[in-house]
Image 1 (cartoon, helix red, strand yellow):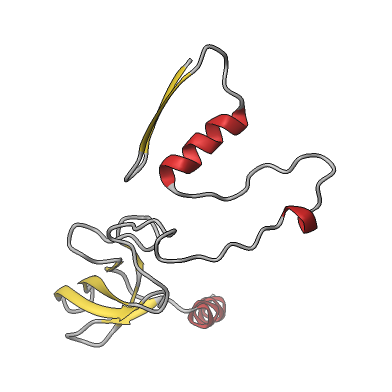
Image 2: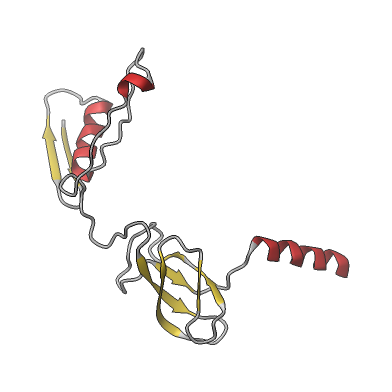
Length: 149
């Protein structure tokens, strides 16, 4: 059996005379991607004795180019449906909306690449091209619609 897995920084090629187990394949995947979450628990083991405290350092953390950290100020690509403004603005990571720099209307922040925290080719984490709709605004609109009937 021959298995090739390519991560962002590491490529793994495994050759074996036998079929690889699922655990061996996942271990190769974890090595190539740098994601070492424990996916298997043997029978009889409890969470108490399988939990391991690992001190994370900057050396052990895989660097992902284009990813953001918690609390960081990030760029937002704005295409305002209200005033037609197109350009960039900034917001904090995990904000659900930003304001258009031109008309100050609230716009919904969606992930620009579809992947949380990943920057697009324009250097933006979020894309704001539709109005922000709040939950209480939806309920108010529904009540007004019912009253209009």
